[in-house]
Amino acid sequence: MTAEALRNRIETLRAAMRPLEPDGEARAELGERALRHALDYLAGVPDAPANRPWAEVFAQRLDPEFPETGRDAESVLDYFAACVERPGFATTSPRFMAYVPGGGLFHSALGDLLAAVSNKYSGFASASPGAVRLENAATAWLAEVVGYPEGAAGTLTSGGSLANLTAIVAARDAADAEGGGAVYATRFAHHCLDKALHIAGRRDAPLRRIATDSRCRMSVEALAAALEADASAGIRPWLVVASAGTVDTGAVDPLAEIAALCRRYGAWFHVDGAYGGLFALCPEGREKLNGIELSDSIALDPHKTLFLPYGTGAVLVRDGRHLLASFSASADYIRPLGESEVGPSPADLSPELTRHFRALRLWLPLQLAGVAAFRAAQAEKLALARYLHARLSEIQGFDPGPLPDLSIVAFRYRPQSGDPDAFNERLLRHVQEEGRVMLSGTRIDGRFTLRCAILSFRTHIEHVDEVIEALLRGIAALQGGADA
Ligand SMILES: *Cc1c(COP(=O)(O)O)cnc(C)c1O
Figure 1 (spheres, helix red, strand yellow):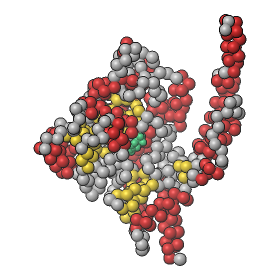
Figure 2 (cartoon, rainbow, N blue to C red; figure 1 turned 60 degrees about the vertical axis):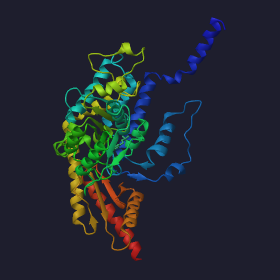
Figure 3 (cartoon, rainbow, N blue to C red; figure 1 turned 90 degrees about the horizontal axis):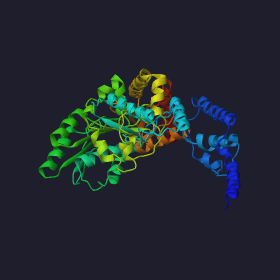
Figure 4 (cartoon, protein in one colour; figure 1 turned 30 degrees about the vertical axis):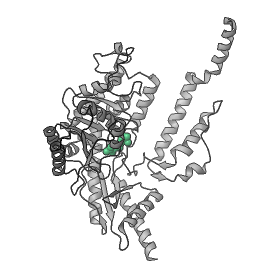
């Protein structure tokens, strides 16, 4: 092709790609439309059901399309509202108290918008010193919250699973390079531990399931016995994984005692604090987490306990050099970009290279709302859990279980007759199908147990009262049905 022919071809292509860059006016219109949509959605959150049946997705019979020619924004947003926003769990609802809720701070959504629009490259300091400084300031702040000393390092991940994986790879390289070391965890450890061991090439590491006490916390005596048994049999204790808030009941393992045992046996002490670790921000939570600062690594989930929208976990390593040793980039074309006065580059602390500029969605709400508001919200959640526990204790028939360590209440109802497991399962299904409040369940030592996890910043005392009302409605319906 001649240059002239190419010029014509290029001009044609340029005209065809124009929809990718709307002009200022079109951007404003699109942006305002999307923002209005988001604000309308949020306006409906207080009264919308916390759970809507799956069937709604299929009832719409609308498969996502990938059209050759762009469609108008209104019809795209309509699709999104009907087929994506409506059905399933409303994790934005103040009455969503299943699994481990997040919430989704609006400030963070704005942070995501700004991060995406500026598209700063947060992997390397040389590319965006300001973004990397913010990333490092965010992890330094988290390290301060948990009480780590100078010299700690960390990185923001996509979530808790990747935070745990990152820590376990660092622990492997630092303390189990040749393999063969044993791992210690209770049966309440999150299943992402199994995935992480698998990915880290340690699927076959001897895994000691340490017994728990009556409150589902790791038994220090049982851990000491397991460590001693391995050490005297010539098996090296490699990794102890403690929970700072289990998913089942929110139980916090005795971290300070576990730390002392890890020191004695030379084991790496990792804390999975994805649910509970960040309660260290408020004094009530800090007290429960005594000893977390003695660990070698911690996984956290700002998208749970700092109320961010999904997509942000964090890993911290007490001696940050271990994180660099495991993940520092070695490719020659990257090396010269190296270090800087704004600290290490995220790409040298994690398996990721190019990544979302996550710090902005964490930093912006802390700037706009202030740390005190977060501290108050966390303390409120802890108090709400104790309030629910107290209310359940006052109602005939409920077995509210032990006082919650954090913000999860695990409880059962004792039916007048019949199998309590089957009854509690049916009760949960009734509440979920009604959809006004959303709870979840678990099995603890074979017993089906209901869970109420209070963690959304939107959840207040009237919503906890609604949990009781929904349960009482369910009980009346089920027992009425049984008597009929
Ligand atoms: C949520 C959670 C995880 C997994 O984190 P994701 O962010 O879902 O990947 C791991 N451990 C605990 C204790 C959790 O609560």
